[in-house]
Structures are given as C-alpha cells and as structure tokens.
Image (cartoon, rainbow, N blue to C red; front, top):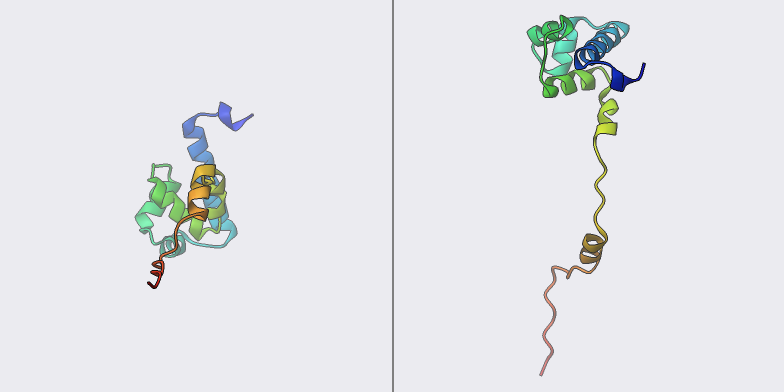
Length: 102
C-alpha cells in the first residue's frame, strides 16, 4: 500500500514504531534516548505510548537515533534565480574606488 493511502494516525504509528525499534536495536533505554536527545524521559515515554509530540521533539529524537538525514527529502534546495546570480556576480566590492589624481 502506498504511503499516500494511509491515514495520518497510521503514519504517526509507523514513525513511532520505527523510532522505538531503532532505539531498541541500538540498545538504548528510554532514559538514554532522553539524555541523548535533550528531551525529558516523560516526552520519550509519551511518544512511545502514542501521544503526540511536536515536530521539534521528533527531530531531536531522530537526530539522537542517527536518522536525522531522513528529513533531507523535505528540505527544498533553493537555487538563486538567474537575476540574483547575475547581481551577486556583478556586485561591487567593498573597497572604495581610488580617486584619480589631478
């Protein structure tokens, strides 16, 4: 089944189960994950029990589990427009031009 066909709640459950599985595979306790992520033990327990947590907390958990790179696909690469590239390439330097001697 494609991911676009599952509910938000099911996706959350999959993410939560994946994080819990990774924690266990790494041999980490909930307390160790809390320490590594900078979150409270209560937040880790809350997450693993299925309660919602905010995105910042999820990112901290993913980083602590070594899975932060999974967010890369969500971050668009913003390239400068051709106009901005031209302006940057032709921007005057910070040096003042020398005055001509008379």
